[in-house]
Image (cartoon, rainbow, N blue to C red):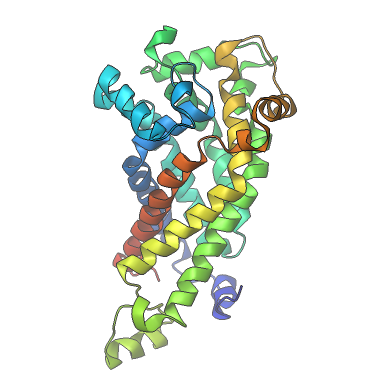
Length: 317
């Protein structure tokens, strides 16, 4: 992959307004992440139910229109609120996660996997609570809408000697999975947008008059892409990232909800992976991937599009 040569030059020079720039990218990164996650929240709920093999929704997994059937079942039983169960915790998690991810990437540029590692390390306990909230159904007897109740349930599980460690169940696997996820997403987006501004600029970039072009060159400002080009680059980056990291995500999700079945059990990633393999082979590691694509493509498209537009609005290019 080829990237513009001046990217590393820009990253090597710290501007005087670096603190202000970092704060702005932190804020708009968080907004972009929250916007994208809200758009796909119902899909995310169904995906978690499929990934974790929830007893009440497993029958829909792998069937034709299983996504729609599961979504319709949730809506009939619990209304719109059921489709967004756990979303408040998702927003609390995704704002710092997305904010740190984008801000760190802007500061480090090509160290995209490191951005993901930093982001997931900060937000993982919130993700643990959010996944458990999305997994629990009223049939289980738990008050899934109460963040405090779910957090206490996780804390009191005896899988580890110290309760706080329970909030990091599956965390090492998450660190492994975030390397291909964040790395592939940022590198793919960077490559595709560079391609759009270069070889395909005639159709993908917004037209600019001679004066605007001169200003862009003088300020090293990147040409603005058309909406379809930016959305396509973001969507494809999400598709490739999801494919590369999905098996790690599936095993991690099942580790996160293991305590809901047996609070005293201590289940390793190897045990879960072996169980998945014995039950369904390679295909078992990709259960719910179709929903993942349906969710991740628009989510990444909206996230990168919102972020780039806000950057342009605040003149951060």
